[in-house]
Length: 165
Image: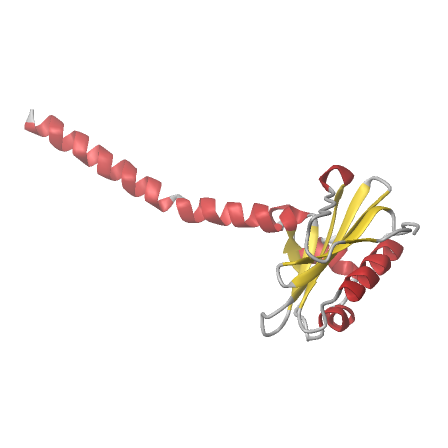
């Protein structure tokens, strides 16, 4: 009886140690899925190829690092070199579009796709619009983040993606 208990406890501890070994790989898989790294390198992400860090630095008002996958692979994010700001571009199916009419600083952007809007968001600015079958979103934070810069970047993103304003 004592041996059976010992074996049962040994099995519990052995399975617990195996379970404890799994979370880091599961955590890495989750991180890769959330950022989009599970879909491939950021160098293969079409949004990361659209802009250089130098081009986007003007919108954020500070130097940016190279773009990295973001938004579950539907976006690309350039983080500032001092990690105090960023620029995010996201293109997703139009069903994911949001039009937060009650957000601080919300303003419609007539003539900028369908439901074009700009609003304050977490210390920065977000501009979004439906263009064709896609929702296009830009988010900017940093010293130069403004409604005007978010709108200008969204207009440029739409043009670079071949959309019509």
